[in-house]
Length: 249
Image 1 (cartoon, rainbow, N blue to C red):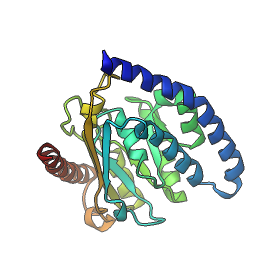
Image 2 (cartoon, helix red, strand yellow):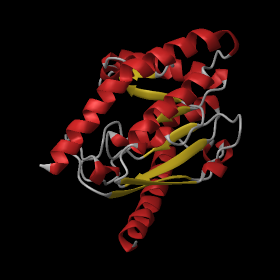
Image 3 (cartoon, rainbow, N blue to C red):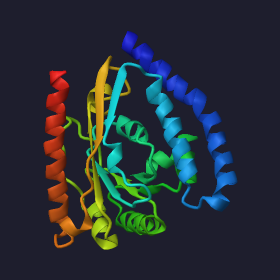
């Protein structure tokens, strides 16, 4: 009963704050766009907006490591494992510039989805080849403009926390645009907010770590499939270590 009450409060708080924060985002977009075409300020405000929802939930004990591995003004293809809807909120806590690739349905969510449109995040319809081609074109534009791209190459959340096979789009893009890959590993979100659930599950330890970039020179001679497998293996190994560390705490 308590867990459901906490979940209801959390959803109510999101609904209560989203309209006001969206209006602030809209105003910031109007004011800053003439001198901030990549929308860096708007994205940082969105990081703040999303972070509010993890700050107000003290039971979510989030530990972040590796910010020093993000080089200022560098452009990356950012890839991460995907365990929960909460992964996006946690990733916003990193506070550096990138564009999300997200399923098209998210862009229709009032206020939050509308803010994704303001940010020029990239939408994707699963299983739609035309949408995939359009997504890749938009990602290329953002990378050439100097914005990193953040993708979950599993394509959807893992129901059991295990790293599923990777789709190739992120790695095709990294090869085409010759940008380094920045691997990120997230642990614990699948317990804090399981797939197909919005129920609060009590105190949870959540870790997110940015690892050193994988330079283009490391994978330039590989296929997209081989690059995907290399990065997936890396993330799986780091996630295993992270999970073992979490259990020992």
